[in-house]
Length: 166
Image (cartoon, rainbow, N blue to C red; front, side, top):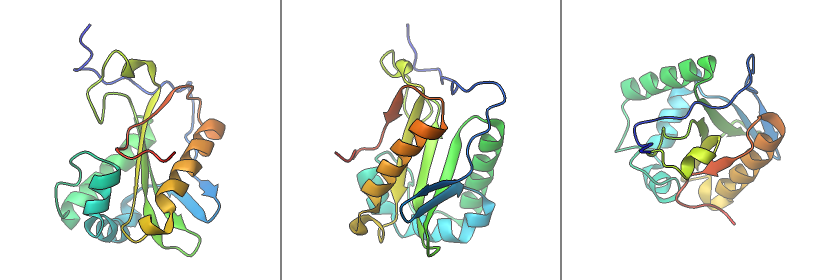
């Protein structure tokens, strides 16, 4: 069967409410939204190279405009509310923007294959160019791994970043 045209819905039980807070060491995450526009825009635009290097893929294709980023944030809010996908913004305890992580249905970020169809969720993340050399890329990966195991009903998690910490 050719799966490429499909996106697999996240396997969530009826009435499931996605968690709205992650705390891990000095990291704090919550749903990404319009309130994060200024910080998100600055973080993405100053971190394009490190995002491409670690997360992989073509996003962002270059510097984001405020208008484009606002549309993106509104889209993330809607999908979170509807349980289609979940985008989280990450700050440290001092309030410094660290990055984001995303829980997407399989087939959203890349074409669905027979092998990929066995996974429940596709996870990717990025941190700012400032946070990366401070070890936050690896720390956020560990935080998300632990949090997913405790807070979501996913049994098979796929991490799709180009660089997966060991």
